[in-house]
Length: 205
Ligand code: ITT
Image (cartoon, rainbow, N blue to C red):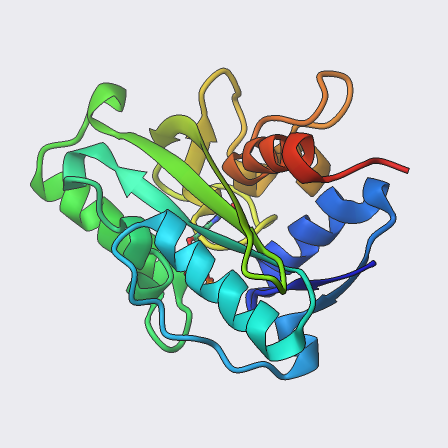
């Protein structure tokens, strides 16, 4: 069957297409369909993912898949969190957003790695045309580096060093960021959430 990927973020869309590839599902993005972006009025990742998935499912009558995600910085009381996209402003300037995080960390005396803890969260939601929802959430923990390293990925990737690795997400290929062979899926927040979703409602082919 056909699935709508309810995102307007090209970085996310590329990752979701890679994650869905083994399932032989024909996917079309909300951007390609020209669907409007619903206002993200929820106060957590999970409700914003549901808002996006439900809006796309209602508009298209097709099963629709959404991700709401962000980076949660411990020393900043969880900011930017669900506001991670909004911190980059209308120009989507993530260099400025990363510099803002670093400025705030410095103000709070976050010199040592233990004061620089952060995690990414991904909430995934599939909304079926009959209003049924599947919802999962996952995270990946790490530390924030400065200056940012690498040009791969998107958003805050160049600043994020996942635990147990010596390269940032910005220095990894998308395959490494997902955590594909030899260890299998399960490094990034999005790949970890996707594994949970696949267990619930996807069959490989
Ligand atoms: P859609 O709502 O259209 O999907 P968006 O970018 O507005 O796109 P979100 O509201 O979920 O999506 O914002 C998530 C932000 O968090 C995103 O813009 C990135 O800056 C950041 N983010 C999420 N996952 C990330 C990842 O894997 N790597 C780097 N940054 C990420």
